[in-house]
Structures are given as C-alpha cells and as structure tokens.
Amino acid sequence: MGLIMKYALLCAALLTSACVLPPPVVADYNGDSVKVVTIAFDSTEPTPEAAAEATRICKAGGKSRAEYASTRVNTNTAEATHLYLCL
Image 1 (spheres, helix red, strand yellow):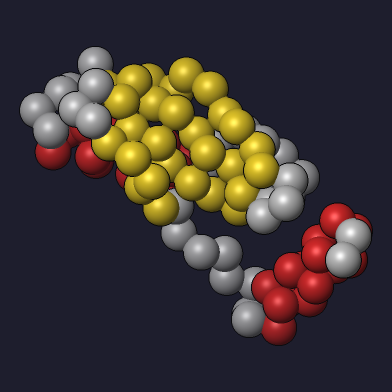
Image 2: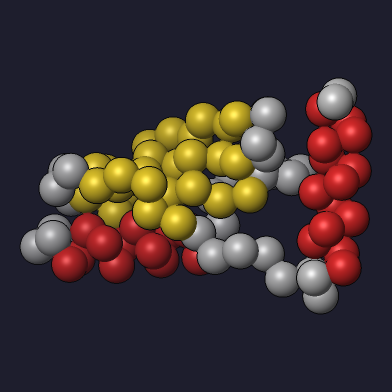
C-alpha cells in the first residue's frame, strides 16, 4: 500500500472520529532527556501539548524545564518523535 493511500486512510479515520487527535505519548525517558511522539501531518514542529508533556516528565524527574532539541519523522507511520532535553 502506497504512502498516499496510507495517509488517505489515516485522514479518513481521523475525520470519522470527530477530529480528535491522540494526545502526545512519552516514548522514552532517561532522566536527562525525554522523547515525545505525536502524529505528523503537515508540520513536524512539536505541538504545545508535546512541550507540556515533556516539561511535566522532566519536572517529575527533578529537573526544572524541558528544552526542545530535535524531531525525527517516520513517514511510514505518520509519527514524529520530538527530543527534549531536561534541564
């Protein structure tokens, strides 16, 4: 199945689910950094919700804030993994 077809099916599924995107998911945390996964449609920029989740995790680990570092996009799954440093 081609990437365009997967994208179309994903869009159709999201449109029928009342346009509610899933919340950001913490994929990895090691005390110094946290990776947050979001859906990547048009933009690979992290959402405010992703930044808030990273900050929440970093603060729970004793750090004062989360600073955005980079993003990796998986075009096969339309997911973006955002790396934040816990400072």
